[in-house]
Length: 157
Image (tube, rainbow, N blue to C red; front, side):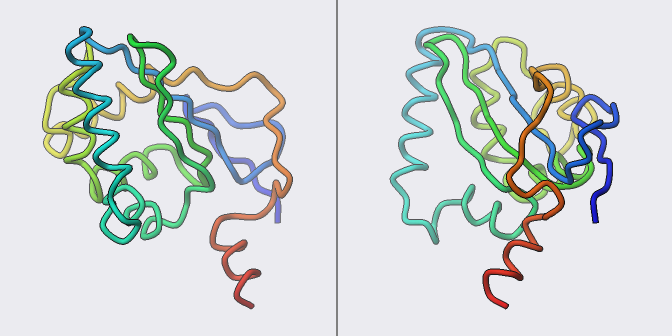
């Protein structure tokens, strides 16, 4: 069943997909902070899948289709995802599951919200909403009416 979901800025998508895009672009405070972020992300990426807190959280949350970090240059870090459901619920799941990872990343950002994110949920939500570049329509999905859980069920069913 195709439903209309709010996009990351609270608008209703017009393409009828159950997925929503997020392109969170965060300005890095300094070259030293950029180096520290590279080291933090490299360390996380070097962990085995079962020990990586981001991978574990994504598996547990089960609403994220795709996720990746991208250094756009040495002054901006992007978190790019496609997810199911409500934006606020999505962000709060990350606070609940990997808030400390976001704390470690945000301490290097030029205009970070108050930390820890666990104690400042609304400020973090506002920060993510304000730094989401959005999506130039149309948002394409090869399976616009399938959630992550639908896909997993079909794969194992």
